[in-house]
Image (tube, helix red, strand yellow):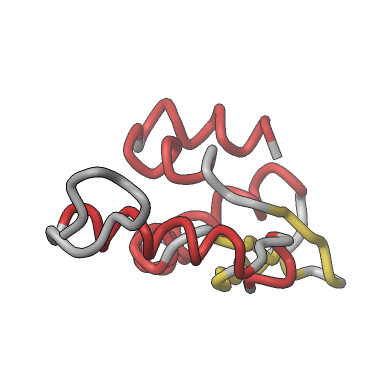
Length: 105
């Protein structure tokens, strides 16, 4: 997959940068399934799927279809603890509570 990214980099730098953020690359028959970490990157890759399919087909020597999917939380291995930490930070920046300090809000 590094070779595909390098080839794309020569023509479309932004696309190559997004390819570097792909969480996983999986071959299923002649389909190359890319798992994206965010909806924004997913959309960017989907817009270029025809170009990616053609480039991958040229490199492999046979027809390849590139499919992009959003990675699930289970695949990432995230848990609720991270979400709780994020919510706490959001509350702090919104001026909500900080318990246990001298200056409780």
